[in-house]
Length: 282
Ligand code: AMP
Image (cartoon, rainbow, N blue to C red; front, side, top):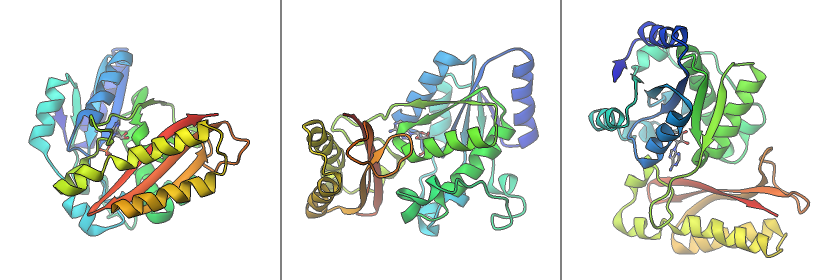
């Protein structure tokens, strides 16, 4: 596996592969890799001849300095996992390389609608930071496809929208959520949970399943349903941020006539902010 931290070297490698007619897949990450990330690589290998992974803890998408400082950085272990997974290129830039003029003077890519709702309402600026780094990575590593997890469903839709609106020639492929055996969605932030919190954490996914089952049984009082389940989470020790039953393509709050739904949830448990979602068809 080739490891590059400079933009020109990384870009040239991608262009060389393009000239050799290779199909290349890009997988952006913030490192601290787990089975969820590795599943994206496996999926990418079905579509592409070359796999490029990026590791960059993007300060622009953090709305809290302590969260940024505490974010787990495990470069050596990540490299071992990427080599074992037969990744071809790792782009691992430093902050100065990505934001040479600092973050505040940098141009921003922003989806005016999707970036302001759900997680965007609680974390103002977060999705602008995400959209901006992703566009930069698409330019540095001009691959034919990029893979993103459905775990971050709102992020996935924002990236699709940015690619469409800015005419970026890349195909976005989504990958299903990988979970622990008890249902908890894998996340680098799960390690912030203490033993007691870890035991109750799967309740978030159970709550999503309860809502899905209720909807499939015919309950279409979505607002009441979401509120009731949010209260149950609070009783169990979570600090729910939101549970929203949405139309799956627009992420607007669903009405009873919508057929393709997604239930989005975010809740604090101790120091961890957990997010999860489940799709539901009626
Ligand atoms: P992150 O390192 O958290 O920025 O995530 C990098 C990519 O991995 C994003 O596309 C995430 O949606 C995806 N991802 C993170 N956790 C999971 C998971 N449990 N299952 C599937 N994809 C995931």
